[in-house]
Image (cartoon, rainbow, N blue to C red; front, side, top):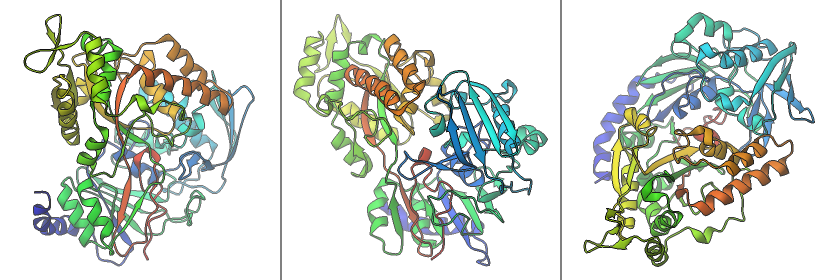
Length: 526
């Protein structure tokens, strides 16, 4: 049924791209994506669709290599950390300018962080800054970043687009329209225009030469990048097959085999990419508060079959909460506790007092084992139905309720459900664990209601560690505790592919925050 629509999508794709592809006087590339962002303000948007453009329009003090572990210079040429982990000193480049031509100095770095910290900004995810005491410019090329307590994740967090340095003068001038009507950054590409739900146009930043050394080129290799919104999968795939200057990471799994086989195209896979799908439990809810029930539900799910059905085998079935390649992953986790084993699942449910009734479902004290799961409509529908089928085999009647994204996040902040489905990006084990499992983060993003004193203490220990070994040890202890508590059903670890048209060189895919093109310096014509 899927391929039936491909032929009819050719005309639609051509029409969609006709507007976006000007005459070929300039080297212009069209990036096809699925959805738009809310704004291009690094401190006020958490959407990947915003981040992937902001990585191109702006720069951070620190960059992340393709291994997703090695830190590289960005706007800062070097940095040092005091022995107590409280003071970071950054030496900045002296040859950086914003797209407007304004020279960037340490004062712009300070102003960016002061804006983020200002309550009036209503900035998001401030925890990614650590517990800031003060950020000061000791001279034009030196920034002193002082913390009230150590934050071992700080440099890794500084590779995230939320830390993009902005032109505070423009931000003040535009006010609420900053990131909507304009964005003045220091990145390899400059903001030209944004037509919401249609396209965002970027042009080459003349004079830019300070791109990270992880690329062969330190300046943009194309004149214009047009980010084009094409929600329909078939239209996007057809556009890739017919437009020689198109590129996309938003390729449906059903199309990947044919796209990889197409010799006119180049398809690359991020060597390291951390974006995982899971089902989480509200561990204090009656139907799932028994660890034996949660373990049984884990053992009832066939991740391999689910991954094959949903991702056509391209994703990696998960037997751990985090992708094994991530920084501070615990390789000693007992993976045998996860994966399909219906016989053991049945025995655990019996031990927990849930007995099968005449209808094949399990009951205890007159109550049916029918937990409610919430999720966002779309791809999770297929995932939820696959899990529902597996659970019914052991007598659990999972009740699925899916919502449009516009209302789902509100629903997921309530206590109305017993389980929920989600996917998430992370840059390190500490990034994921501190976000989801701190007691203070209930009811969201700690939707599991996991309130555990030892977990909080270990997270504090990891966050405030002043050496890599201590940080890793603390985070590994948290992973072991959660792994044995069956707080989640890990489903699969998603891959990231970038497909480029025939006139473009293969683009090495990056894994940072799911933004496969990262700085965009790998986009080039043959």
